[in-house]
Image (cartoon, rainbow, N blue to C red; front, side):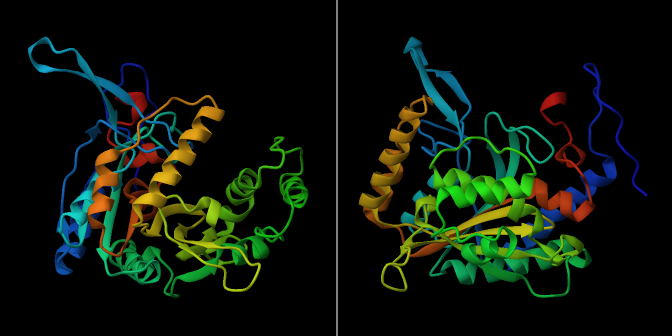
Length: 347
C-alpha cells in the first residue's frame, strides 16, 4: 500500500508525491504518447510565453517581462493558460492532427484539484466533430485508466438532461429565481446573491449540485468510476465552440461543446471548433467588455490567432484534458499535491 507523503514545511525539500506515484505518472505519459503515435497524431510544442493571452474573464494569466536586446526596454509576456491558440495556428498552417502534453499556467488557482502550474494534454482532430472526438477521448481513458474505469460505456447527457436529472431545473427556460431556489435547496443555506445572471447561477448549480453526481456507475455518486460526457451547452457558454441553431422554433441555440466527468471530477473540455474569424473577434470583444465591467486586467486580443483564422482553420474538434487529474484518478490520489513532485507550496 502506498504511504502518505510527509507533511510539508517551509524548508522541506522532499517531493510531495511518492516515488511510486511519480513512476506511475511517467508510465501514463508514455501511454498517452503511444496512444497518439498509433493514430499518427503529431506531437508538437508551442511557447509557454506569448505576447497575447486568452480574453476569457474566468481565467487569470500570469505575467512576466522579458528584456529586449541591446537595451531596448522590456516586453510584457503572458504564461499561457492553454496551448490552444498556438496549436490552431499550426492547424491553419496545414499541420494535420496534433497533440501536446505540456505545462500551462493559471493565476489564483490552487487547491485540492488545482495548482497554478499544471500539465495539460490537448489535441486537435481535423474533420472530427465533437461527438467523434468524444469517442476518441473515451478510447484514451480505456488505454490509461484500465480497470479503474467501469466496463460500461461512457454515458452522454445533454446539458439540459444533466440539470433536469440532478438539479430539477431547465437550464434554458427556468428564470433566475427558480435557479436560486434550486441552489438554496441543494446547499441548505443562503447562496451568494448573483442577481439575474443566469450563467452565474448555472455555474453555481453545476459546481455544487450537478458535477459531484457525474461520472459514477451509480447515479447516487457512488460505486466504480464511469466516464460521462455533458454536451450541447448554452450558447452563452460557447467559449471557442461553434454554435448550432435551435432545433425547434423558439428553442435555444446550442454550443457544440462537451465536458468530461469521471467520479465527480471535471477532466476535459472539448469543442467543435469555431472557425469564423469575424465571430471569434466579436467573442473576444465581448470578453474584453466583460473584463472592463468587472474591473479585471486588460489583455490584448491575439491578432496572430485571428490572422490564422482568416487564412483558414480546417473543420476540426479539439479537447484539453487535465493530465494531473488523470494521474489522480489512476492512482486514487485525493489531492493534486499527491501526484506532483513539487506543487506551488514546495516550489
